[in-house]
Image (cartoon, rainbow over all chains, first blue to last red; front, side, top):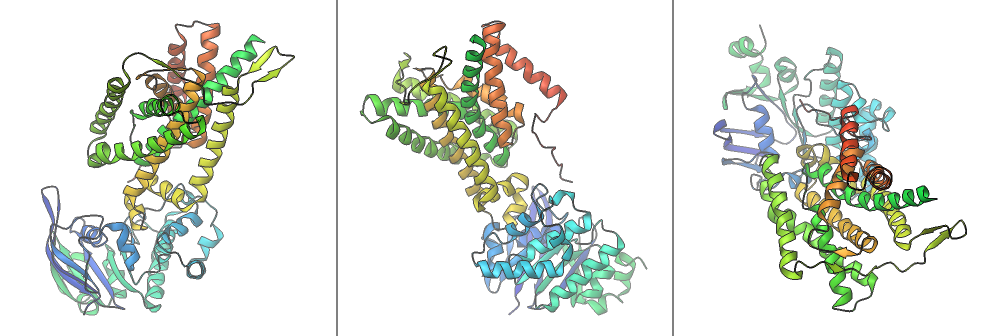
Length: 236
Length: 293
């Protein structure tokens, strides 16, 4: 059984249908990339997955449990962490407070302390700046904070929405290196990216979304050589 | 000495405004709405204390405690019944609803207690303080208002900044969706905010009615509006801002009444607000609003 099983998922924004019955699955330990143009429905997919948006029809099963009827604030406790598009860190709070909020649902003090140490090891910069107000961090540092905050919930799967968006090339490489090391720790990753080249390079499998439908799927190593993908998303 | 006397009265009134303003500022900061019924919760608190003391012969402290409980529950109920269904509605719809709730509370009080104002017996029984060989008397209500408002501001700041529930409130205040992704129950957090704000309104009601011992169904309306001004003045959403704004509004009002014109005192308060907002639109301690892209 797949860890995450999405079947015939349809989602509306008012009268506009953003997702037109998509199906895909994520197995434990995989890195899955979801690529597509602006407005294809990538962010909508992730928002529905973590309960921010309601599904109109279809199902999302996580280890066999139906997620579409569970409110967003309970989903993170089940082991799904979401690094949202645009980072959405709490700008007016300190770096440390942001990380603590990431562990909001947890009560195991020792586990939290251990994960905090792990996050600092992964992002030494966050430790240096832990008492700084988060809004004063650079874009790349804010992205690291958003990822660190998500890791603080001790997730089994982490979904990331455009983690490289708006970052300088150095930070982009750094972010992808970190995704690599997160997966080595055994975490499952669902990655939404416009930087299709980097995403396909790191992913095991990938799905291509076009205007609310999945039009292509397969091994990332195959897709990266697919003529259509090359033309539409890799700029070759 | 008369000036000092007026100043003390201003600080006393300002402390009460501050406690009311805290309720406004908390609810605005977290739920992003103006709860114009907040002032009327003060009135309800006043009537609960009045009834408990006169009809039930309860002692003053127990009566205040009853009022705090009653108003806390009232605040939660108002939020559930009137505002929660409008979470996705425009802010104008919420504002009109708040005005409706305000009239509802005023008219319910009219129905139950009649139009004749009742005289309120002070709940404070500490001694007056005499200064300068008795030239200046600080009334017990004044001492109580100042001390209690300071305790509330410090307590509330500690609660918001140091506890987990407080941090959840800050997170919801900044970004509701991101807060949910942290596992924070946004509805419960907003409910808690209303509970705290309304409980504070009950305390404000006890102080206000003890200082100005006439109670009618519109008692809370004008202080409610002044406290709203105080919250905006200090920077809406800011806890210390509410305190500073409340004190300034109280002092300006009393000094304006004493030295400029009793009739124009309220107009002066609003004129000062307009000037402050022209110079600093976010209020004295207001934070710059970070627009989300």
